[in-house]
Image (tube, rainbow, N blue to C red; front, side, top):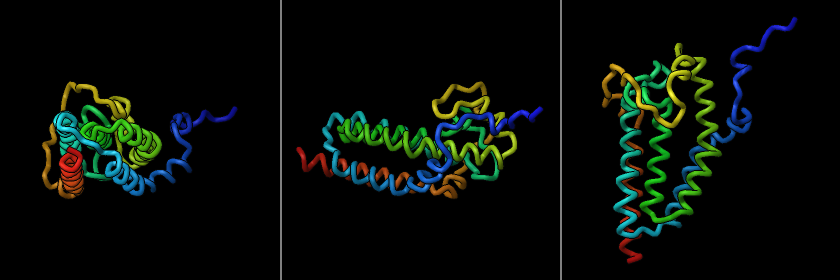
Length: 194
């Protein structure tokens, strides 16, 4: 009688590994595509800026909060936003992107962001999950308890406090710099298009 398949073999993957490996390397080039699309398709109005910028800033703050709890490849992050979702950095990216699309008054940007997230970032999330399951003890139990992306209010937010040292080590300030540049571009476009 053949041995039953291992738990890893039983787990269904969304994306074939060769595809996921290829697109994981495309995250940076995809960022340049998003940047070019953002520059071209943004047509902000006063109202779109008032609605979209606070929304995008909330996503940026979620990323900052997550970065202050994440010791990459060293320990399992389970406190702060990691108590509600396994991928608060990606969720923050998604919120920031859609907020900037709203601020730019561009449904085309929202569609481009959604397609790139689905085709590039979701496979990257899957690869990271596989990696973390191997290197971090307890990750499988954590994954069974905490949702992949969409947050669920936890009973306990964990005991680890936000660490500004981790925020700096994870270089999350780069996202802030990028956001400030995007906001400056939106205000410049707004003044030109008025």
